[in-house]
Image (cartoon, rainbow, N blue to C red; front, side):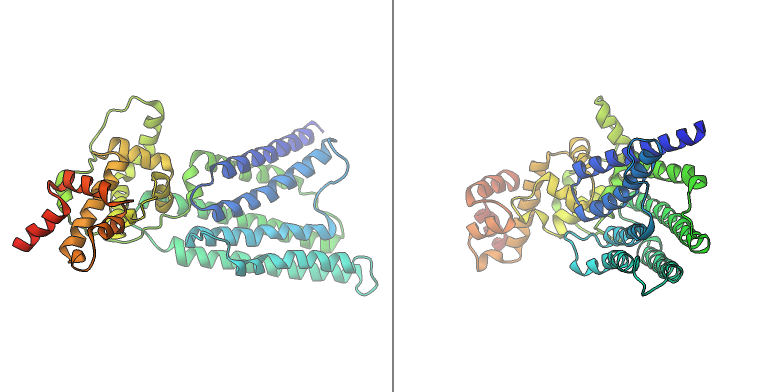
Length: 388
C-alpha cells in the first residue's frame, strides 16, 4: 500500500515538473516558436494526464480519474504532435502551416463518433470496442512509420559538416524522442486491445515507473541541453569559400583565452568545440548572404537566424572576435560597399543609394565609416579604381 502511495506521489511530482518545463520553454522561446509549441503540447498532454491520474488516486480530487472510455481517444493527439514536432525541427517553419491541421482532425472526430454512438442502439458495445481497437492501432502505426521515414530520410541519414556538434545533439535527441514515441504507442495499443478482450480498463500500474522514468529523462535532457529547443542549424553548405582583404585583418581568433566570469566559463564548455563552425556560419551569413544590408539587424536577430542561443553569439564576439558586434557589422557593410563600387554600382546609382543598399540609415554615417576603414572617401575610392 505504501509503495502504491509512493508511486502515485512520484507520478504527481513528475507531472508538476512537466508543467515547470513548459513554463521554461514558453519563457525562453526565441528562434523557432513552432517547434517549441509542438513540444509544449506533447509535454502538456503527458503532464496533465499524470497529474489527473495521480491526484485522483492520492485523494486530492475525486472528479476525474483518467482519460477513460471515449475520452481515451484524446491520447492519440500525442502521435501527430510527435510527427509535427519532428517535421518542424527538420524544415524550420517560422509560421504555422494550415495544411498541418489535417493531422489533428482524426482524434477529435473519433471522440465525437464514440460519444454519439456510446448510448445508441446503432452499434453494440462489443463492435464499438473492436472498431476502436482496429482504427486506433492503425492510426498509431501510421504515424510511427511516418515519423520514422521522415527522420531517417531527412535527418538521421544526412550528416552535416557545418555545426556538426549541434547536428549530433539534435540527431541523438530525436532518436531518443522517437524511441519514447514507439514505447508510448506500444503501450497505447496494448491498452486498447486489453480493454477490447477483457472489457475492463487497464490499470497501467506495472508501467508507471517506466513512464515516470522516461518523462524525467526527457525533462532533464531539456534542462541540460536547452540548445535542442532551437532545432537544426539553418546553414548547411558543405564548403564555404570567401576571400576579402579583411581576412588579413584577423577578425577572428580561435586560440585559448582566459575567462574569469563563471557564467562565461560554462558557455566556454559548450561553445569551444564548435568555434570554427560558428565562425564559418557567421561569415557565410554576413558576407555571402549580405545579412547586414538590413539596417535593423540586431545580435538577437542573427542568433535566431543561425538557430543558436543569443548567449553563444555574445560569447563569440566577446572572446573570439577582435571587434564588437556593432563594429563587425560596420566592417562587413563597408566591405560590401567596396565590392559594389568595384562592380560599377555608382555608374547608375548615387552615393546615398549605395549607403542605403549596404545597410546604413543615411549617407553621413556611411561616409564617416567608409573613410575611417578605407582611408579615403567613397568617391576617392571609386576614382582610384578608375585610375588603375
